[in-house]
Structure formats: C-alpha cells, structure tokens
Amino acid sequence: MSHCVHFGICGGCAVDDRASIKKYALLASALSRAGFVDPPVMPLLEIPLRTRRRVDLSASRAGAAVLLGLNRARSHEIVDMTDCVLLDPRIFALLAPLRVLLRGLESFRRAGSVIINWLDHGPDLLLRMDAAATGPDRGKMISFARANDILRISIAKGAAEPELVAMLAPPVINFAGVPVEPPPGAFLQASQPGEAAIIEAVLDGLPALKARARIVELYAGLGTLSFALAKHARVEAYEGAANAVAAHDLAIRRNNLAGRMRVAQRDLARQPLKISEFSAAAAVVLDPPYVGAGAQMKNLAGSGVSRIIYVSCNPEALAHDAGLLRRAGYGCLRATPIDQFPYSENLESVVVFDKE
Image (cartoon, rainbow, N blue to C red; front, side):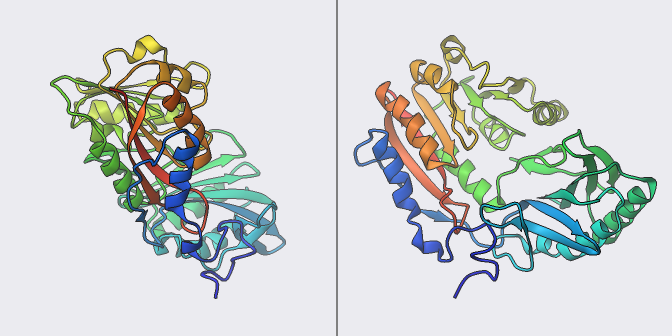
C-alpha cells in the first residue's frame, strides 16, 4: 500500500517505500567513485516524517476551482494536495484556508505560487501572483493573517521583489540561540531535526582549534551553520544572495558578534575565493547548492587547508567535488548520511576531509 494517496501522480516522491532506496549505499558509492577506498560512512540518520517545515507550492485557477499543491511528475499540471506524509501537519492545515484566500484574490488570475516557511513561532508566507495586488486583496490577506496566526505575509507579482503586506509578529528563526529574521521565501533546511543533525555532524568534524582560530565558511546562507561555528572559532562567511547576507549581517550586529564573525556577499560561481584567501584557515566549511561547488572547488582543493567539511544534498555533485579533493591529497575521515528527504534519491550528508 502506498504511503500517500498522491503517490505515482505527484512528483514529490520517487518511491513508496522509504527503505527501498539504500541511502547509506548512495553515500558510500559517491565517495568510492571519487577515489576513496572503503570510505568511513557512519550509520544512516533517518529524519522523522511530517517534520518538513518549508514548502513551495504551485497554484492555478480554473473558474471557481483553485488547485494548490505540487506538480505531477515531469509535468506542469498541479496535483491538488489532500495528503502529505512529509509536511509538518501545521503547514498542511493551512492549505484549505489558503485555497479560500486565493479564490478571492484579484491578483491571482491563472497561476501563482505559495512559499511557506514555518519559523520558530509560526508560519511566514510569500505569495507570488500573476497580477498586481489590489487594495481589497491586501485587506483579505491581513484578515487571513489574523485568522490563521500568520507571522508575515509578503506578496510579489511574478519574479519581482516581495512587498510586505502584513506582519503580526517578528518572523524569526534561531540559529545556535541567535535570532535571525529571514527574507520572505528564504531557503531553510527542510526540517529542524535535519538541521540539528547537520550542525552536530559539522561540529564533530572540526579539528582541535587554537585560540583565535579562523574558519572560512562558503555558501553560508542565513547563518544556519555560522552561528554554531562562531562558538568555536572566528568565522569568515561568504554568501551570494544579497537578502540572505543582509539578514545574516543584521543578526551579527544586533547580537554584538562582529568581533567574532563577519559575512560578505560574494558570488562564488563568478568570483571564487582565491587560494591565498584560505591562508591560515583552521578549517573550511561549505554547504553548496544542489549542483555542487563548481568553480570554487579548484582553488579549495589547491589551498592545502588541513580540514574541509562538506555538506551535500546531492551524491552526484559530491562525487565530483570529492574527487578533486582526493586527487589533491585529501583523505576522508568520516561521512554522515542524513535522510532528510524520504522517498527520494536526494540525500543530505556531511563529509569530513583531512590533509595531513
């Protein structure tokens, strides 16, 4: 029996048996292809179902009918979501009232999307519609926020910059005890338990650190790892998205951490750090996008930094990037597979590389 009534139609899951994809083997195989013999892969950490706190849903209107859900496999057609074993039930409970809201919006003509991030104290919504919001639309969104305890609602026409419509409470997420106000629709780790497992594996991979040791962090985002790392060393973080850098930097300044850490905006695909910029770093931590670290890997592999901790969500990209490190003389100390994406071949992992 399928785990979900939508399985085989919705493109969200690839299999209906979580155990049918051997995630441990996916990580071991990726590292073996990179040239590591008998890589030291730790036991698989399985993240519980119904803990996903972030979702990007498609919406469409056909007359009075509003569809809200994920796309069919290999299609733009939307499967109207009536069940999901991955989503936090609090997010799922918002879908029915969201359909009612969308049905009444003049700015929602034919197609749009809804991004929901569940932050520390409630949901943060970004609505991308296909027409400009009207005055009545804004009133309906404010009423919706009040009725459903929404922290913040932002709206945008198409790909335009989001505009705040309602904020009933600060939209905040804590990283290592530091409150950060993410921009609308910001990227978060898919689940809080997954995030905690990643942070623990990264911290466990740090070398013995001397006073005033320096960690270089690449693809730092909002600071998911940065603020935890800053408890152990000085952190020099780099991120390409301007709005993420602004939120990250504001949290640093508000919490008087400027003497311990800094974040800079830098597109690492177009302007990767030079070998000299890794000089004297005790460790490099990177959490690149799905496609991997790309142009940055050549200089990182050539830097000679003794400890590199690579957070991956794609075994294929990891195999490529780890191969560059292997050929540069790095060994693999430990690899931790984290199944944060059940029923799919995506795999989160934390791999610790060392160069004596």
